Length: 142
Image (cartoon, rainbow, N blue to C red):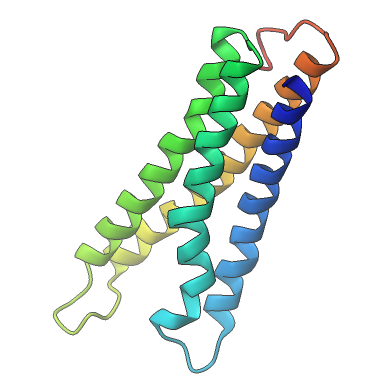
């Protein structure tokens, strides 16, 4: 089960990395529109949350220490925060739906939160590898 925890956390990391690619696809699609971000939306709202839940399950079944399980739960919370940031940014558009300086600033936090989530998932994967190799997971890792 510990090797599966490593594999699933690696797949989760790959999905998070692909999110940046899918965001760039949306940003550089001409003409742009809501459909430009379809891959980003589907991955962020369905695939990544499902992988987060699977990773949490694997951590529990691998009998990971509590702090590792807690670290494994954190990406799901950050994914929920991503959706909230996107909704909040949308709430600050003008009457025609165009971006405002406030909505753009809040939207920028969506990218920052995504970077933080990737770093957390790297930590999850590092902890999973240590657990699979029967190496004690130091406090700083998880």
